[in-house]
Structures are given as C-alpha cells and as structure tokens.
Image (cartoon, rainbow, N blue to C red; front, side):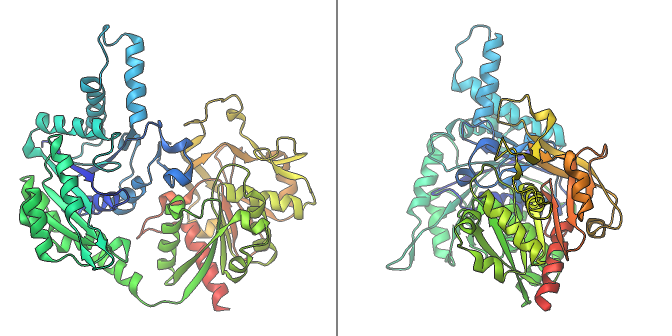
Length: 536
C-alpha cells in the first residue's frame, strides 16, 4: 500500500491545538485498523529542546531511545499509544547540522549549498524515514509554529515538493486555525483565518481541511464563510470549540465525521468500525462528581504549567484510577525558601517534587521533602525529586549537615548525590545525559513492589547525577529502602522510606509512560495514599 500523508499546519497563533488535534485524528485512524505513525517538525535552530529553558519550550519529552523531543510527542503517545522513536521529531538545527556536515565531507562535489534543493531535500529524507522505520500506512506530520513564520518556510516548501513527488491523491493538508472573538461585541472573526490561508496558498499549498478552533460555538454560517473565502469544500471546515476535557477531542472529531472525511479524501476504506466506547467511558468518568485530593506540586517552573505537562496528565490518570478528582496546588520551590507558599503544602494530601536543573529553588524542594517526611504526608519524587529526598534524609536523619548534591555544591563534604562516572569526561551539554529506557529490578516486599506487581521494569531516564553508593549502607541502616536498582546493582533507581505511608521517589521519569487508560503505578500509589489521608 502507498503511504498516505496528513500534513498539519497552524494558523493565526501558536498553541492553537495542532498537536492534540493531530494525536486525536491519529487515534481515529488507528481505531479504523490503519498503522499510523506521527512526526513533529520543529522550526527552531536548536538541535533539540534538551538545552532549552522550560520557560521557552515547556516540557522536554524523552522517548525510549533517548531522544529529547517536543511535548507534542507526549500527546501522540498518550492518545495513539504508539511508542515513538527519534525519527518522530526533528528540528531545523538537525537539518542544517547534517547538511553542513555533508558539505564539509565534500558530499556535494563543490556545489553551492542552498535552501532549495539541499535543505528541503534533507527535510524530505527525514520525513521518509518514518514510513521506512515503522511501515506505517498513514503518516501524520505536524509543522511547528504558525504559517507566516520565516523559520517554517523551508518545511512548508519541502511539503509542497513532497506532495508533487508522492502524488496529490496521497496527501492531505489540514490547517488548524484560531477564530478570535471581539470582546465588545462577542463576535467571532474569520478574517485572520482568511489571511492565514492566503499566506499558505502564496507558497503553493491549499488546505484540504480547515479545523476552526474557538472558545465558543461556531455557527454554520461562519463555516460556510470560511469555505467560500478559503476555497475549501463546505464539509471540510470543521468547527472545534475548546473542550473542557482534553480526552474528549477524539470523540468530538468522530462526532463531526472527520475520520470518515479523511478516508474519503485519501480514497481509503476502513478495515473496521472505530470502537470509541473506552474513550466515552473515560470522559464520562472524568465528568462524574468525585471527592477530591489535593497535591502540592513543588517545582521551579510552575509559572508555565506546560513545563510539567506529563506530570499533570499522569496525576489525572492516577486520580481516575482511584475514583477521585485531583486538585494540583502549584508551588514555586523558591517561595518556600522565603516562607511563602507553605499554606498550599500544609493543606495538601500529597506532595510531588518533579525534575529540574540548576541550583535555584533547590533548598525549597529539600524543605518540601523534609515536611512530607516529618509529617507523614504521601510524597512522590521524580528524578531531582528523588535526589532532594536523599539530601534531606542525609542532613536531618543522618545528621550530615553539609550534605548536598555536587551539582549544586561542588565542594560539599558529603556529596550524597554525585556526577555519574560515565558523565565526568563530557563537555557538550546537549544530548549527553543518561537518556532513554533502562531496566530496573524491583526489590520484593516494598511499596514499590506492591505498586508495580512485577519484579522487572523499564523506565525512561534523563539525568547526569546519581545516588552516591558510598552512603548506601548508612542510609539503609537508618530506614531508607533502595527498592529499585539497575540489574548490575550499581545505580539506585527507586528509594522509599520504611516507616512512612508513601514516600517513594525514582531516578527516572515515570510520567512519560503514563496513559489515560494505563496510569503509572507510582502515581496510582501516590493518589491512593493521598485518598486514604484525605478520608482520615
């Protein structure tokens, strides 16, 4: 079967919901029996988001093979439930780095290197890798940013060329756009969408489907107006009001016949009828009134909640499994150092400390771990959240007052967290951490073992520093349990406290493997313990 392509572009503003829409449509096509692959093209010149500030980019989503990718890949995995690889995300930086490397080797035989054809050829080569690696029948491809951005022009030109190479009958362009509302009149305006489509058409691409996003209902007459001015068939303008439940988006698209519309335009026949009942039940369960538990999320980037996208979703998945609502209290760890934000922590049924980098706000995270330990509040630490739990334990249980991580204090007398041996000779920052899927052995008769109910697991990592084994015996003597270790026993993967309702922390990032209908065991354990505390 010839590979079919769905190209997603964005109009008017960024963060319009392209990623969620692409993921939801991927689910509808998978439900119809097609093998679907997804790819995100990011126009920034960084090689990957691994060295970018979370304030700039939001969460860095890590894949099994260690690729540091865009947070939209989290949406793809959560909706479509495919385990993606590094071919599913590439950037302008990677395209230029590869092209320049070829030029330095003399691969172009002295030719002048230009955006067309050399850069666009490299973009097309990378797009082609997806179907080769996955054997996908349908490739969903999302172009980051907004039509009109100078950065995305080479990507759009490459897609225009690709359309002609694979055949127009094998491609669909889906333009996701925003319909703003004038506050004074309450009137929805289509003019920005018209300009966005005009910009797209000026480079030779006409959208086949327009997803018209808005915060309120979009009347039929507005869809007809968009169809008329943008030269799109009337049934190909799909109004999409902002959903109050993220996981309702596939149901809304299915209700409006988008899955069948795509198949009709690509001349495909479904192998089976989609079964959306699990998703309908999921959304119904989300909407059902439930008791709530409060989780204080003590982070360093809480001003931009997208920095903790997967953590937030994993908490919601675990809450559903425990038949409760989760109320997340966002606490800036630096505030705790200034005696601010403690009311949220003290009112919480559980404390979660996620990952992060740099020394800012670290003492606040250590204080949060101490408070949860001393007051027997359920606690889950992720990556750095595990490390600060160990620093608190060293300082306040083992009386090693100057204990710290050598990441934050290179001269500390007690580096209970220290740089991994295989990281010590590395000078480049990007893509050089311990990244991706690694095995872990679970110790029996521990809270972790009860949560996972298996003895061997694999989880995704993103770190340079690790627990210092020189302190392992002393920690164990005072009640710290090393409930998960690498198969060679060298790397501490999971720690927990023996005399605590639920104080568990992992060196890896469990949030990356949580799914709406398959919540992660460590998050389920946290919310279960929080529920029990709330009921008391």
